Image (cartoon, rainbow, N blue to C red):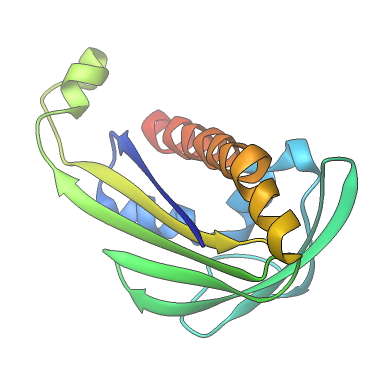
Length: 164
C-alpha cells in the first residue's frame, strides 16, 4: 500500500472548499486533461454520503473506468471516497478541510482584510494490482503521477474559489 499527503491553502472558507470538492461538475472540469466523464451514478451537483459515481478517463493512453463511493461524510470538515470497482487493488482518498486565519490577505492583498481560509489536506492510500509488478509500478510511476494529478486539481479548485 502506498500513501501520500498533500496540503493546499485556499483563500476561501472550509464550507466552500468542501462543497466544490464534492461537486462532480467541478471534478469533470478540473480533470479535462484526462478526458474524465461521468458514465454512471451521480451525474450532476454535489455528492453526499453513500452516493457513487462512475468515471471514465484516459491515463497513460489507456481508457479506465472507476466507481467510487462517498464512504464517510462530516460536512464541512471531512469526507472519504473509496473505490468500489476499478483499476486499483485498493483506493482510499480522505479529504480534510481546516479553517485557518490570516493567510487570505497575504496571498491576495486586493481581497482586503484577512478572512477565513482553508487548509485542504488530501490523504491518499492506494495499491496497484498485479503483485510484484504492481508494486514496482506504484513506486516508479503511479505515486508521482497521482500526486501531480491531485496537485493540478487542487490548483484548479483554488483558482475557482479565490475568484469569488
